Amino acid sequence: MSQYHLMEKRANIIDYESCNKSFIENDWAPNTEIPLPEAALCFADREPGSTSCHGDSGGPAVCKTKDGRWELVGVTSWGTGLCSTDSPIVYQSVGYYRKWIDSIMNGEDPLCNDAD
Image 1 (cartoon, rainbow, N blue to C red):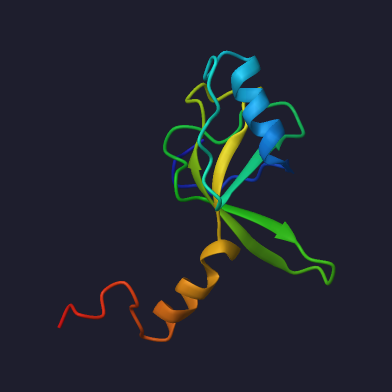
Image 2 (image 1 turned 120 degrees about the vertical axis):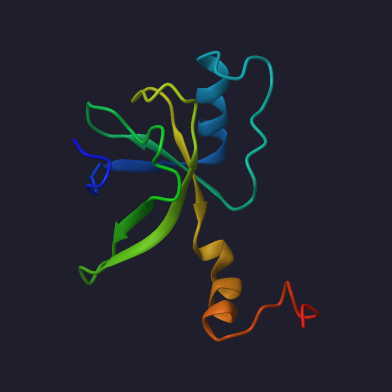
């Protein structure tokens, strides 16, 4: 499949503890906890096949809302590099950064106020 085609994959969001446990138990990060940031969302595959892999960083994670609309909830960040359904994938939460995103969309830049 071409790198220019958007692919679809079903996955579940898993909690922080389960995500860390998976990395540790499978020796992807032995004897240490993955320092997941507060803004992290972990996804685990629900069906066979490959998960997010090399080159997928920045790709969307979307969820279907109760009214049938699709909502962007995360942006692909990192995983083990194994491209395996056994390992969770870490996304950055769009909701966590929503206030900052909205300020940028409104022409403000709170991080670079003094850039003029």
